[in-house]
Image 1 (cartoon, rainbow, N blue to C red):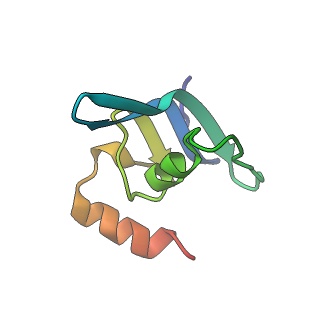
Image 2 (tube, rainbow, N blue to C red; image 1 turned 90 degrees about the vertical axis):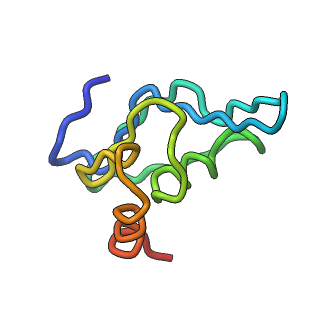
Length: 95
């Protein structure tokens, strides 16, 4: 999936998130591709444990993906440090 700049406000390409506790691995997201354009209305739905909150945490800069690319407002969040992500949350994420 090619991610463009400008009209796209959220884009994920091959996004994966794996949590590990001891020998147990949980794949919360696996190879997710997503594109949301400016002005679009999107709904994230699925069964309990399907990765909805994990995806929102990654979009919100609270968590980082294990692999893949997440771009929000033309910023590649998976490459940013905690200082940037803190400023990003304060400026862009509203309750």
